[in-house]
Length: 237
Image 1 (spheres, one colour):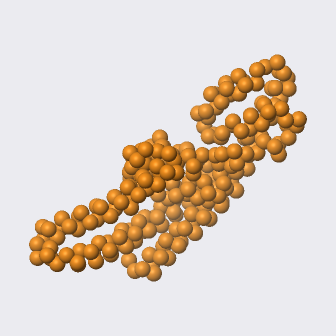
Image 2 (cartoon, rainbow, N blue to C red):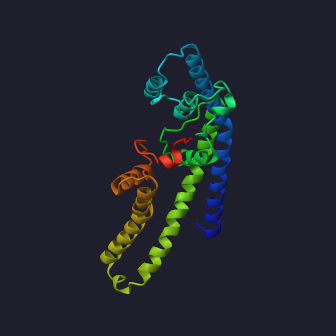
Image 3 (cartoon, rainbow, N blue to C red):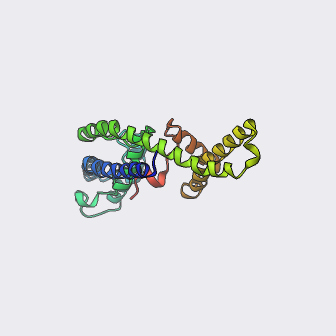
């Protein structure tokens, strides 16, 4: 693959990811916000009608019940605001927290779509988001596949140059093949496993083994979803 073609593919993929993240943000963010407001109103109304209820215990019960809720919305910040004793508990503008579907999270969701990883921790809930996701995946997966092919060809260039610096193996096909395999394996493992694992020990406070496990499971597109970078995918606020 020619360098210009490869660069065009990479730029096209980045553009595709950015456009997708913006579209998912506008399709899913409103629905998510409405769920948050509905939950906050229900909690505020319950407290207004049951002033003698221990609010701390109620919060603990709700948090336990909703921890595995399919919507994946963090309700702690919303309910804690109500418990803090705000005068206007039903003010919708005061209960909106940081969106799970911001542009950055949407961008990473798009990566999991076109790479076929699909963790499942973030999924479109609206009909518009689901419809868009269908076509986004159908067009995005082939584009990403082409980028992977081009990346593989790019990685072979430094390996070939390094191989040319070892003339003693050129007359020995067995050693030649072994050297190529070792260089390819070591380069690939460093780029896709060892270096990312080290980064995750810093950003996610994981062990190095957990970082390696996540890298391998992710890049083989198995994507169990048992380990997900919280600093990237988890809603805050």
